[in-house]
Image (cartoon, rainbow, N blue to C red; front, side):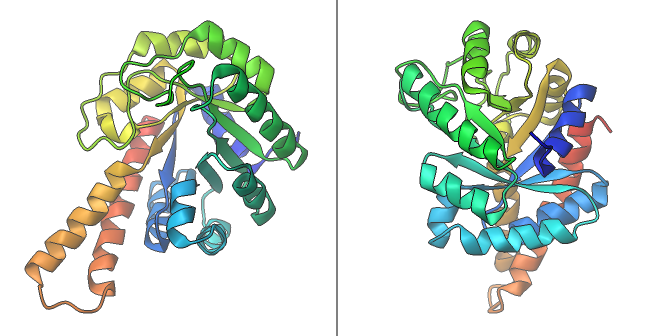
Length: 278
């Protein structure tokens, strides 16, 4: 399969044991901020649009087209990734729109059903030269791979990657989605064992709950793609709240969305440098 834009960003990091930042887009200001931060850091980045965000906007197309335009005009490599898609129709739409990677999330399904559904998506995406990430969930569980206490078994990970032919695997090593504090306790030994066991890049979800030092340790232990969403949303919202608190009569949304966009760009640049070991 020819390399996609996501391959071209992730593969060198995987080989060099450095990290790639993958940041979630909620609205166009997020996409602008993420690209600006990557350009400031001089490092590649992945823009992620989740199924939840597509639902928020009413459809995937408009926010995707805007993000693709920003990616295409950036001075650093930028890839567009569909995050946590449970809908096969949405995956197909993303491929048609020009996304270069998708994360298909069948982790709520029992293992055998997860495997079969993921393999079907992988076969479809690979025919279009699109890179596929999957999440190996808790066997029989409903909360997926990032429910509290869940850990990915290396032997099961090997079997899953082999059977599904995915290009990257999101694993459970101690982080959780939507954390508002950066105090997650990661299992670095497990990360290293997973890196040795499987021959595809590992993905850390729930990275908003991980502090800078542990993000760097996670990358050194074997994580490659690092997903961040809630942390940037906190930065964005805090900046808006501060501005409106100081300027209660503000009516023009550009007056508070602009500073929020700038604050997110600053944080993206900083996090990219952390993940790259700079």
